[in-house]
Amino acid sequence: MTSTFEPIIGRYLTLDLGGLQHRIYFEEAGAGIPLLCLHTGGADTRQYRHLMLDKAITARFRVIAFDMPFHGKSTPPDGWELDEYKLTLESYTHTILAFSQALALDRPILMGCSIGGRIVLHLAISHSQAFRAMVGIACAVSTTPWYDTQWLHRPDVNGGEICAGIVSGLMSPASPEARRQETLWSYMQSGPGVFKGDLFFYRQSQGLSEGVASIDTQACPLFLMSGNYDFSCTREDMTRTADMIPGARLISMEGVGHFPMSENPDLFASYLQPVLDEIISR
Image (cartoon, rainbow, N blue to C red):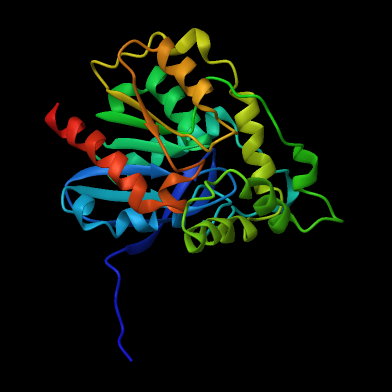
C-alpha cells in the first residue's frame, strides 16, 4: 500500500462573534497572496479542496477557506439549541472580517460562491478597502426564488437528503460524476436547519441594485463568474448585475453549474487562472 499526504493544513480558531465564542475550522494550502474562499449555503470548506490541491494556484497564492459558524467542523456556540439559526447580513459580514483580521491577512483576494458571492457584493460596497480584489461566483443583485425553504427543516423529512436533492439539479450534467457526488455529500451532512438559515440571508439581502453602482472597481477589481447550467443564479441575472457596476468583469463559464469549484474543479481552474493573472498584473 502507498500513502499520500495532501498539502492541505487544517486548524481551529476561536473567535468572539456577537459576544459568543465560536470554534471556527479552516484549511489552507500554498504560499503568496492570500486567497480567502467562502463556501455556499448549507455546505462547507470541502468545496475548495481541489483548488487547494492545484499546484499552479498554490505556487502563487495562499488559499484559505473556513467553515462558517454552524457549518462543517465549526462547532456551534454553547446554547445554540435555544435559538433558530438565521444567517444575517450583519453576522456574515462580521464573521468574514473578524476571521481575516485574526489571521492578519494583508488585503486578501476574496472569492465566494452563491451566498458567498452575494456577500462579496455587499463587502465590495462597504468594505472594499480590506481586499485587493473580489471574485463573485454564482451571485447577482437579486434572483428569483425557486425553492420552498419549509421543506429544509421538518421532522418528517431527512434534512440532509432533501438539501442535497434540492441542489442536485444545479450542477452541469457534463461534470464528472464523482465530483458531483462529492459536492452533494457535504449537503447531506449539513446541520439541522442550517441550509434554511443560510437562505434567510439570501432572501434578506435581495435588492442590491441601488448600492452596487457605487462599487469602485479601480480600487478593488471585481470579477463575476457565471456557469451556463446554473438556473438558481442565471447568466441573465449576472449579466444584469455586471451591467450595474462600472468596470466589473463578467466571466461566462461553459459546462458548469452553481458549484464550479467542486463539481468540475479542473474546468473551473481554467477560467479562474486568467482572473488571478489579471489581479497579479494590477
